[in-house]
Image 1 (cartoon, one colour):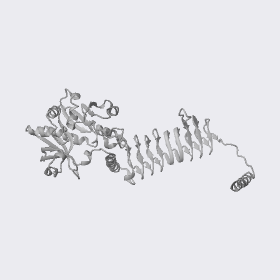
Image 2 (tube, rainbow, N blue to C red):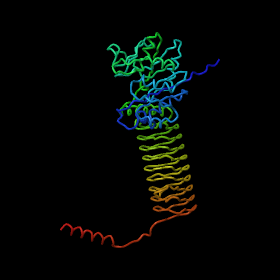
Image 3 (cartoon, helix red, strand yellow):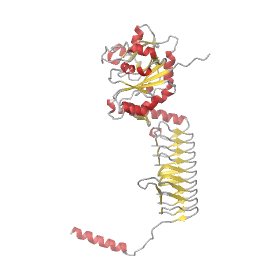
Image 4 (cartoon, helix red, strand yellow):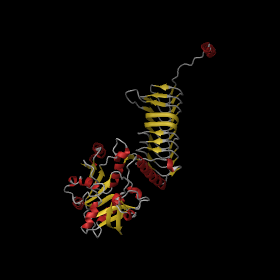
Length: 454
């Protein structure tokens, strides 16, 4: 007999002003690895297939609406009266919902889907707890609220500011994350008061109300305190970035990539690496990068929005911008920038080159100092370079222009007309020689300078 899955709703609290960030950008929209911390959390939530999601907003509501689109309904907490009051603002958005409810925080982005599942599973344990709390044991308990428990049964929840010395000695802390049946959660919240040091309606008090009713409440403890770390300041944001990057570096190496100096390599949230990829020091990946097997990325390269096929070599000091596509065994060398351009199999651009809005044929060789002049001040134009073409050093290809297969562009040329297959194009001014001109010039200038000093 199959069981119908119990519907899940998720409430994400994001109504705080985030004043410690000192930013016009909403706190939960600050990026980690190129993606807003809120969206990291929502992606993890998505693995559970929630039926409904509600984002509780206050300050910066418009920014949140633009960021989440139709992924979540927005409930507004006009007055900041505590976390319990914040969750209550989602009640009308969940009218008619019958199922489980997870309460999460937009500034706690690293909670894993597995941890969320563990909370839901515990909610449906044999003792049917009214509330499940996610606890953790940090190295420093700081100002965290405490979970006083007997085994995994919660005896009492208490905020740090309201805790006794004995209660503060407890190392099991409250992450703030909770699971409950939606009906239970809102019924319990309706009975929570604000008789405490802050005069706020604490979400944690739903546990104490349930306990007073003789119901069971349980704690699930995560073994990774880092997944419940909150982000309230720029320093904590930097720490979260470091945490995420450290995890991703370890993952990349475990999957078969070699990082010469892991601590200097920075990934984006969506960077995809193949096997036997070698990454030298000080490489930065922006969003949208895919790297195939056997690629070498040399030091001090910056790569964003690019696709790199197997056997390629990039850098050092290369920049691949969005729309860069390197096919198999392409070489892009030092101080080369590629933007919205395709380099076909075996093409080479080894030095000091800009290739923008271009299609470079297989086996073509782009000499040092070559640029595609793709912008006329109003519009971008495309350059097409044929297979096996040879572009001499210090050439300017003035788009729109087509260089044929096996053609040669002589060094120093400024090419503004198409070059046919197999043709040599040489575009240089006539070289003039004026014997003695330089000597006369130097003599005149030295005399002028001497007279100026009198």
